Length: 319
Image (cartoon, rainbow, N blue to C red; front, side, top):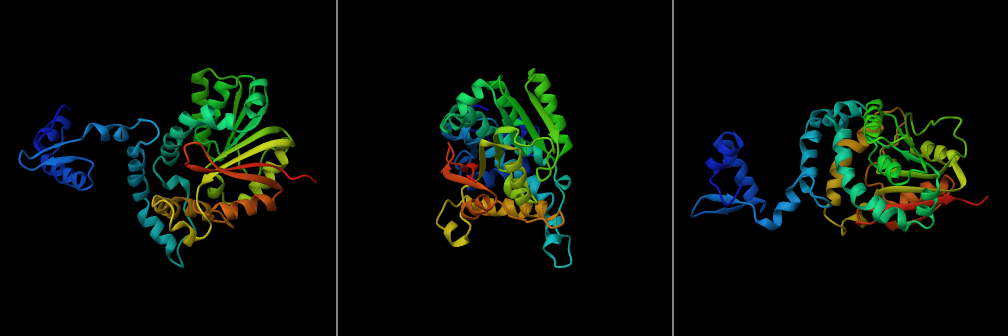
């Protein structure tokens, strides 16, 4: 759309009703997303805002977050029931409309821009090991975004993607086949109960934004300890937050979004399982370090490239 347009012109171009478009434009103007010229009664988006509004514009595409609003809103009444003392303990992933598809697109922004370019080279010796050929496990792989990149860029390594949702595994397998990847395997299994034959199998284990959602994170860490080699490396990526609310109040206001998403998804999907821990997205790095240590890992904490996540770089404790 070239140049400023009236609400009617915009509605005609989009094939929509002008009255609804006009009200929506009012909201966009109040949010300073769209500029409004009162004399001409026209609307336009300044050039410098356009990149952030494109669906696949790279590192800062706000439209991706906006897509989460209708997805989470669709379960509003179900979540309200979970609040009640006599209500359900939690809610199944299946209640959400394409939650994993949404997360795949959201996560791909970080994967595509940082995983291979900055993250892997930033871990001592990891790139060299991946180039020569090692066994890699992607826990909670979803639709396989990270797994596919590992397999594409390190053909000598064997990549395993693990997720407990069969539709995610099916999608990830289809994508791998379409890409012609032959060094990748996807397994539908709980992270808290992995293949019994995988004892000391993996050189590198990767978890991206997964551990806080897991109903049984401690069992998951015990399993990772079991399947990881003695000299293996574990990367746990999670939110850059503190474990105490008062310590988060002076951080970025976007952490408020993390609390909302946690309330609407992370906590209820974990508590849906009997005995689920319900850590939530803002469980914080202090509690994470404590849990990792309690389950046999020494870890160094740093901000990930792009400063979006907390990276817990872990190795097994010496015995």
